[in-house]
Structures are given as C-alpha cells and as structure tokens.
Image (cartoon, rainbow, N blue to C red; front, top):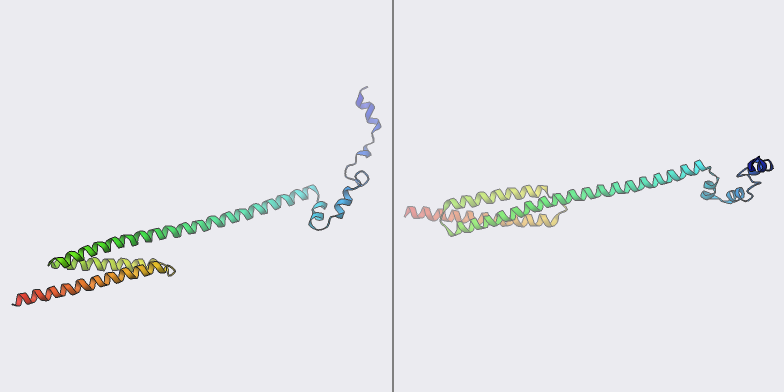
Length: 181
C-alpha cells in the first residue's frame, strides 16, 4: 500500500464543492450586496467578465484609434495648407523680384532715349499684372494681408505703366516736333 490509498478513503468528495454557499459563506452574500454596475459585474460568469473586459478594451482602443486618425487628418490638412502657402509665397517673392527688374528697366528707359525700351517695360508690366491677377484668383478671401500686398503691387505697376506711357508719348511728340522743324 501507498500513502495515497491510505489518505483518500478518509476524504469525502462533497467536502470540495467549490463556490457553494455552505463552503464559502461570504462569497455569494458579498456579490449580492453590491448594486449597480459593480454588482452586475460581480454576478457575471468568468466568460462574461472576460467579454466585458475585452469589449471595454476594444472600445477604448477604437476611441484612441479614432483620435489618432482625426489628429493625422488634421495634420495632413494643415501640411497641405502650409504647402500651398509656401508655393504662393514663393510665387509672390518671384513677382517682387520681377517688379524690381521692371523698376530697373523703367529707370533705363527714363535715362535713355531708346524707344524699344518703352515697349519692353510696357510688355513686362503687363505680364506682371497678369501674374498678379492669377495669384489673386488663387488666394483665399481670408488672407487679407496677402490681398493687400497684391493690391499694393498692382498699384505700383499701374503707376509705373502710366509713367512709362506718359513719358513715351511725350518723347514721341518731341521726336515728331523735331522732325517737323
């Protein structure tokens, strides 16, 4: 004989019924005494508790994923807006450089008697006015400062164009009167 066969006849299998009220006097009473969500959760089976915990974690993960997705979407839109602003700023900077070139051309025209210089300045000014109008059509109405700067540049170009045309017509009249004399 061994020790297990000597011990086992003394044990009754009904002594080991786990989870019954006789063996665990406070277990069911404690679960019953809870009310609300805690009581409901305590009354659930282990499988039910696992389902609730998994579902809660899944819902939390979905909320976090939604927040991350929303954040990335907002970041993407912002980066696209910044990219567009960069392109517009670059185009405006190029236009400013071209206006400086037009000023140099008009200074050359005013200091010389070359009639071809007038047509070159007028052509350049008209081209820049077209670029400014295309830039104005792209810029949103909420960009007031940029629109004001474009209006200022358009005004500057208009005044340069008027001055060049006036000077060119005066030179043409002087040249015509010199030919008549």
